[in-house]
Length: 111
Image (cartoon, one colour):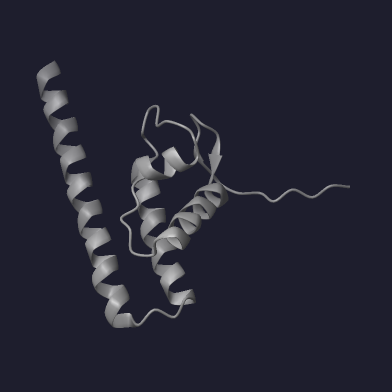
């Protein structure tokens, strides 16, 4: 009997799992541990394109969590991790706010 590793589906448009995304993030961090990883950068590394982009908010949360865990495993000093993770969270918040405002504007234009 074969056993398959089961991983949560994150992008249903491209059929991409959580473990595939985490592996890609780690690979990108191995190249440059302090780079700003975006959903577009992940998709480019995986040779796919965002279609509906509904998964992007979850991707950003995964980027933050995986990046933080990566630096903890590498024993990066807290004084270096915390400001970097805060920058990632701030950028996530900024993007989410812009996305929500665009959605509200779009809904108002239909009224």
